[in-house]
Image (cartoon, rainbow, N blue to C red; front, side, top):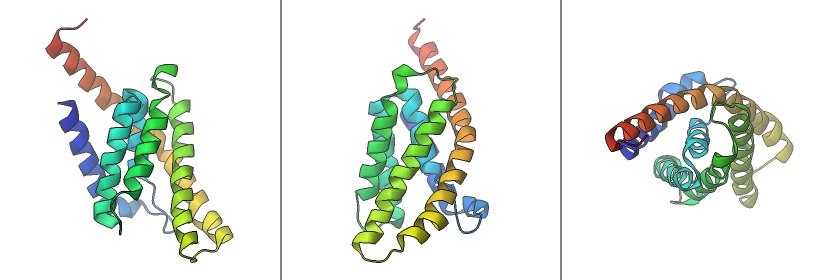
Amino acid sequence: MRISIIGILLLLVHALSATLFQVLRIGDIAPNFLIMLIVSFALLRGSKEGSIIGIAAGFLNDISFGTFLGPTAAIYGIIGYICGRFNKNFYRENFIIPFICTLFSSLFYSVFVMLGFILRGKINFIFFFKAIIIPELIYTITLSLVVYQFAYVINEKIEYHERKTRNIF
């Protein structure tokens, strides 16, 4: 049940990011909804599930938009694992940790994207940082609070259903 719901949610967010969410672009900058979803579920479910969700989301992204299969999956998997390590150390109702984790995760992802452009020799670092990284970072962390609340509600329903079917507690 949990795997199918999170899988469908990943497919839905990926499809919407490529199509309908393009309307949300401000100045050619779009938020990264996959990072928001990975961070949210990693914080709610732990590092193991966070890394699995990250790898699955990365493969979806690599299959659709990448030239190689695996780089985005590795980055998203690392993000899911690191954010999932905070699972035991915070209250789920707290929105500061998801905000901070999304901030650093988005920055981590942007640095790796920028590194790819640097290796190809196609980058003006100052322009890329001011025109793309900072606006995308602000946009992503602003919407991350809404996505975390959505993921929190979905996770509560999944856990309630699991407790009910297993007769635990």
